[in-house]
Length: 615
Image (cartoon, rainbow, N blue to C red):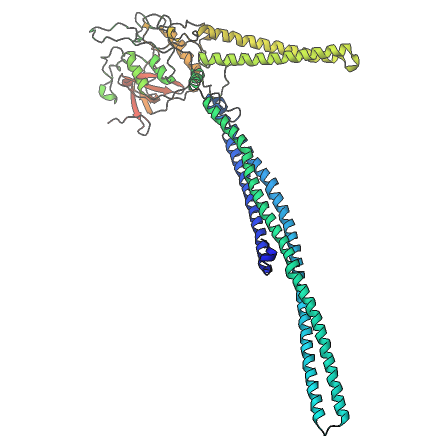
């Protein structure tokens, strides 16, 4: 099978076919080049995607990645970077092993093809010249033969004519002989050129053209083989990265299998555990007594007669203060009057008061009524761990619940110990350098290190004092926290009364109103301490919005805790209307308190949130 034998007469078609083969090769190069661009773009997009979901440094997201699920996700993002890197390797290998190599080969192929077809055209031109020479000699031989024939006929005619002189006949005979000689010469020249042309034609069709076409065939077969090898390389480049990509995927699977839901649940406990105890049970309140009910354990009386009730902070029912109570709700619970409002002065007519006085049948309001009020409402919860707006966090982390405070203090102690160790290592290094200088004075002056050594020693002393301070706070907190793993034996009264100097710290033991109230003389002081305690935590609580205004009809002297004194004719803001107990909550500048509803004339703003319309 040879193109020189089978396709001896298809020079033009072979030229077109080989050009098509080069076009196919260039098309494949373009395909691989676009594939490398896609791989680079895909790798870039993968890297951008992984970077987009990486946790930001020094942000809340970074803290979330301590959970095993988040760690697995972070590992997936890192593996995606490696995955993207393998696609970059594919692009680089395809570019270097296929695109660049084929582009160089195409240039060589074009030059080789050009030389072969140049030789073919040269052979074609030579045979065409030989053919033209043959045709020329043939036409000359034919012409000479015809002229010799005409000369012979003319001679015979002159010889047969008796009227022609002998000289004319001899002249015609000589002319005929010349023409015959010219015809013989043309015949010999034609024969020679014919033999030469036949030889050249034989060489052309059996030697030159087969050799040229054979070289073109070999060139085309090499092109086909080269494109096949490039396709193998194309697949091999992908196959080379498959093990690494498989490792990336294996690492993702391994990270997914490392997820521990129990560990994550424990981390949630460690992150949000406050260390407070839940409130105790609220005891039953007996309303069947016809006489004035004695003060029970879960009622709060503010009578100023024989004694004042006390919030019981000691004993078995001791617990934390409920952290879900807004300051204004809690303070209204603890400080609002729990006795009927006084009637208006006798000189006043009932009709003069738009919001008439409530009937003083209710002797005292049970604590559960006010608990229901804030438990059914939707307060704006302020987390104990949140810092005051506009203020710095306390150095001892007293703004945090006990458990969270302990964790922060432990973390701070660990950081200080690391810094102390770092400074000690630096001190040891300076000391060794000083010893070297003492032994080899030419290397340096030992006295030049004294200042640095003193500075490092002072830093160590400062850090040790700081660490001792935080360790003392840590020991104080750990001394008050229950033993770990002993949750079943926690008692609600395990927090003892704290020193009054530390009562303002949010991390101190806070008691919950769990029903353990007794009529003792310390109620007012305990309420004030409690209010002060919560003030530290809720100083940033926004004041209640005004829902209207009121005008004092009479002078009222607020003597009970939670009441506000007003003068007749004074105009004030209403922030909480009468809940049915005969008291209205008002504000004067920064002061808030309760006044009897019958002592004021209320003008509610209909557009205010929570305002009622009085007909």
